[in-house]
Picture 1: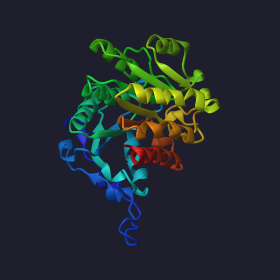
Picture 2: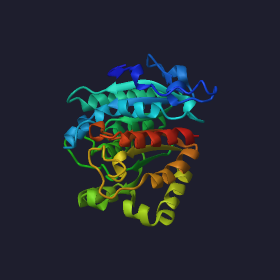
Picture 3: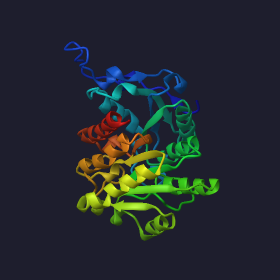
Length: 318
């Protein structure tokens, strides 16, 4: 497959406790590491794909380094204990972007995800910048053309920018335009958007596109009345859910290792209250975690936090 590369075995290493008991296992011992891209051999499993790309971040004038995210996140996930759900994970390698070739990389990610979905696999993608969402999301929309697909973004930013070229700031506007071309509905909800991090032009675009936004302050101050009804509505009104998590939704004290750390942010324990009912609904078809930048993760805390989110999603995913 174009731009596809297998993952180095060094990603999946950890502490071996199997001498204690047969079920004293960690993820590096239960993950299936595929030497070739053959999703048809893993029907019913969860495909892990890396999108080694920060071309979109560069175009968006951000801090480069997210291309190294997939390796760091796998490494942090590898040593976590393996419990229910984790045994379904199959590592199907990385899409590796070439310099100045974002659109080609997004198309390659789209094609890989679509192949996985058509093989009855769910997809978990480690980015990469939030340009990941156009490749991943467009594939989900193409895989289920006759179903209502909700796009849920946990993010400090709306990522609805008008720009001459695609970037990490444009993925949801691109998805909206794709839906316009296909004459299909655009069902986009953003949890955690910050008024301070989005210009009025972006809020105007969100209004024009009928985007549902639950701001960071609403999540912090009125979670039960602002977030829970919206989560319930999404689950009830849609057939499939695509969940994308920009790690800059977290406070800078929990996640400094991103291109644009959040001054306020939404703490992980609140994000998990959004994620759990979605994952347990049986409607989540695809998830990605994006914008992790190991260059700024000097103590490794950010990788652990992001990996814990991925770990929890895999554990709750039904």
